[in-house]
Length: 233
Image (cartoon, rainbow, N blue to C red; front, side, top):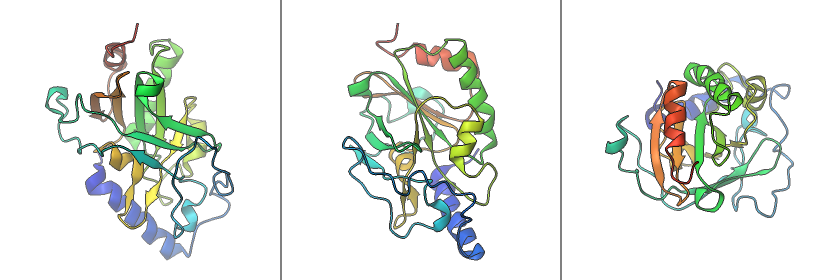
């Protein structure tokens, strides 16, 4: 298990150190999909850090956070989570195809947000579980599923993450998390209080946090938690 306030910032610092040591990124591995994209009118009111390392170019996007940042998750006991029942931040970003990805359950309905790191073995094991739930129609149609590709590190496996998600058959929308170079954090992950990978936040139709957890879960448990969201048949 990898905690983001202790290690996601370290992942960024480590990635920056690696890029510096290598003299910049490899043009053959970095996607150019976000480099020249024109942000749609409904896209984020944000910019990509001008001092972004070359290896990250095209792989992180502009990310706008509207609302308060959630506290870091420190317990797997849902009832002990101080964020439970509080408003989730609205997060607006871009997918690797340049399309707007918006996390806004109050506007769009019950939502499951899945934070994924390309180098995380738990994420690589959990995506097939989620895909199987998808293929078995065990995630209700009313529930929006949104992935967030975060904690990029060009020195770790499965880089670049856009190709990784394609290889893993991730068919739901996927936001390219942004990077705050000043505070050395991944913006969307920080806003949701991510403490491990994979990290899931369930948001009800009122825009409030219903549950958060980190690490892998059994398919039946995920299906039960998602199905228990209000306004889900």
